[in-house]
Length: 352
Picture 1 (cartoon, one colour):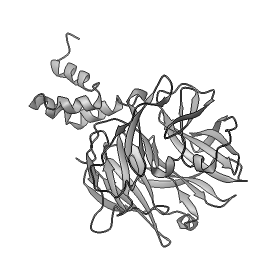
Picture 2: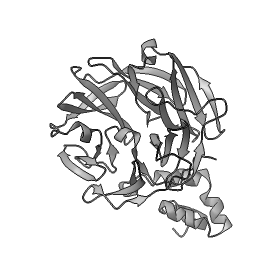
Picture 3: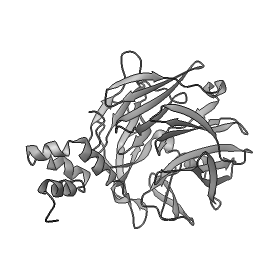
Picture 4: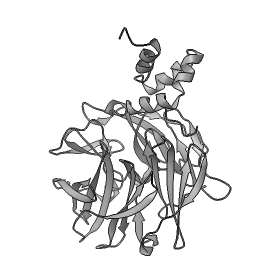
């Protein structure tokens, strides 16, 4: 350590500070402010922030928006903190569409506007433009948030409008939208198909595309974020005698899918993607009966060999699984109708 320059030592120490302490440290002096504002610092600090102790759960209901830690020793929620939206809204009509490295891509449901928002720093950026870009319609559009090879945060917006599909990319670096080509099967443009939010993993955004009918078609659409090329891969070979739902999860930069099938009794299998093929990791034990109203309100997490089923009030029950330990919590179900997210506290800014 004696041979290291003072600047390097300071840099290494500051990249390990808690996120809110980084904000306070900017006021120490001009040199620290400049250092803590560089993209290199933000990138390294972000990479060191992805630990379970730094994860938070954001929950939105009709009256409040709250953030809670997940307590590692009992895998339950900690005390909540009320969050005030820094942008105008109506009765908490905010839907969370995608999240990555502490940034949330959200929609204001009364205006359909898209925003990037960091709930830790409270900074936000409106993505809507006068030429009709950056407006989202639920059940028709799909959103994916990603980082390209140049460390530029981008939003992929897939729009279905009256049988016409348009694909647009927003760049944080240049603060603008542009259209990119996308050729896919015509039937996927139908409202009978439901597109998931994009899951970013290994330089690719993945979307599940599932037909709403029992026994319908289910596929995965892949978007290479650097070449901006699309391709289609098959869904895991799950039974099609009931409703099918596939939830994609990035676990240590390896894509996994929790595939649930059934009607009144759900069967859930965990799959991992190797190349373009799915390998089954495990079949979960039967899930205890859950009422439909409660099923729509629960959230699943998996970590350290256990699968936790929780409501907004706390843990409902635990399913033990034979899995390698995970360092973080991973949501494995759609999150209460876009009313919540697991995110990491970072200083990543929604704008340059």
